Image (cartoon, rainbow over all chains, first blue to last red; front, side):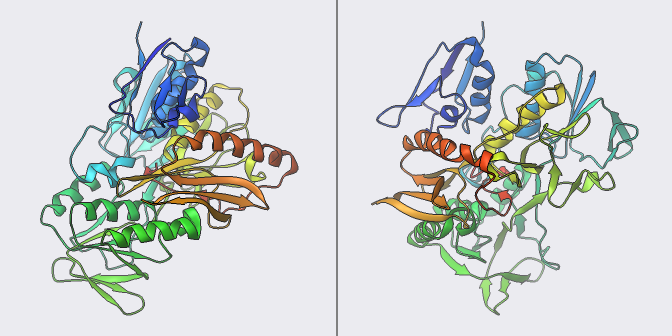
Length: 63
Length: 405
């Protein structure tokens, strides 16, 4: 699956890191880094990350 | 299961609906919400949303394929007929998700004067924003997350703000050390913090004064009552499924056969909490438990064992917390830096059970892992952190929110 994070919106609440640590993490500067093509098996966790993000910055790309 | 009704159109109910669809449920889905709005994010209501209108709606509601019955709260539940009652209407179901969240605690009698506001829903925030334009002298009653955030946001607009709190600000949620930091931030920014309890209000046609139980009086053009919230279970009266403590969920994720519950209203035995029951009033929990309720309804799940996590905003600083941080844990500041950056650890019987911090975002995922590991054996030894049984916070559900988020 393909995902995208709107980095202009991201406020580093780290809710996505909590929901799906396999796909999201924070780097040394507290910036979010993520795997734009996570395994399909992570879909439930990714959907939780989308929902849990307080600023709705995480998107699942269609197709 | 062909017909599923979700009562509560907040994040928990919405998450349940999404998970039902993701799991392949293609039957009739009805979402019943007391507010006229589709699911939206509640945490901003005490924060940036007081500064200006923005789109808080949760993405994906249109794609849910649900019938939305909004603007009227459920009035009853007929267990025999398996129907949710909304006034005269009865909505039959095979499966039910209870996600009615919380409602603001009512005020002492005689305080319903114009100029006295609650802050729980989107329309409350809009009403409050209209009042703010006149730059009123504002009294915020309640030193929890909603009260603290609202005071900070309104002070940020340059309003004269008094924060009245029965206990030191944020103390019950985060302990004395972090509470003292929050209170210092309020004072530094010019909020007058007063310890006390509201006895009532008075004024001619509109609120003019807040009276405290100690006899003191505070002049007020606007009062925001943030006295906490309680589970919305009135509509379950007579069913035995819910009371003032919420709706009890079993280890199988169900309240009764074919009935699940999620979010701020749900109480359940937490394995990390030595099997005692608790409710978690945080944003992320509403999302997670909503999905869990959906899985429970469709059958076959394990116990629900989330670690609480929430955030709050104060004067541009974001406070984050993970785990159990209540005043009954022993808290200790492990870092304190200029600009109100800090980190506090929470222990119970020597065991790390929680952390709260501002300005240490990257440390949080690591702490979360450490705390989960530290607590894991607790489930087996049946020895967990003490708690009042409510992990409250943000406007998470404003509520929640919160939610803290």
